[in-house]
Amino acid sequence: MGFRAIWVAYTTLVTKEVRRFMRIWPQTLLPPAITMALYFVIFGNLIGSRIGEMGGYRYMEFIVPGLIMMSVITNSYSNVASSFFSTKFQHSIEELLVSPVPNWTILAGYVTGGVARGLAVGLIVTLLALFFSDLRVQHLALTVAMVVLTAVLFSLGGFLNALFARTFDDVSIVPTFVLTPLTYLGGVFYSIALLPEVWQKLSMANPILYMVNAFRYGILGVSDIPVGAAFAMVVGFILVMFSVALYVLNRGIGIRH
Image 1 (tube, rainbow, N blue to C red):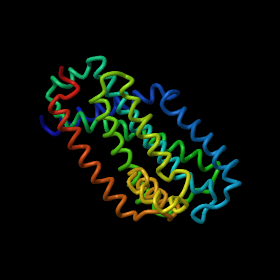
Image 2 (cartoon, one colour):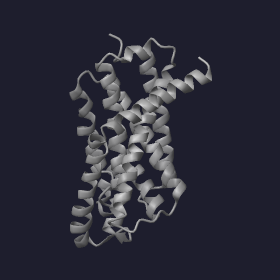
Image 3 (cartoon, rainbow, N blue to C red):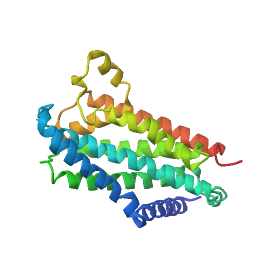
Image 4 (cartoon, rainbow, N blue to C red):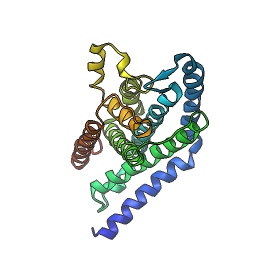
């Protein structure tokens, strides 16, 4: 296929994915906004007033970057996982497989759709945060780069989840038993400096900790970990997961029976 044909296929997939989550916005965009607003009220205002400061900032301001990143992670992941598995379940994936569209284009189209939903929810949560805190971005380029890279990474994770899933229950296993614990233990609500040394070292094995702290550094200018290491780790994970997802897709694992 020529570049123009590949571009048309890619934009068609992205348009389909964006229209999909925009058409059912009460299920895809509204619930995360309500959930995060509750986090702001309960953890930020009610509990935060008793905690005081953390990392040199009011507790509300400290948790805002983590909550934004949490919404981006969960929504970019779930969008691709649910969309691609639905395509498998309805057997409409066969139309893509028999077409001359390269597999990397299919992968890129679904991942871009997941990134679009993750960033859309992240923007909504950011706008909500303005009602609860005085949000000022210290390093704009770094902040945007980290949130986009994180959305790409977890969109790839959602794609892999959908490839290997056999039932709708399989799609929810990873978010429930892996993503949720890692996110809550990833420094969203606290600084790891508060933990005993042994738990600080164990926390360093949590990849989400690096993303949350790098994003927090972009907004507040404070971080528990080296920001350069966070970017290197995220980019490395993206390259590995993209390669694995493309390999699995080329082999037809989880698709061809």
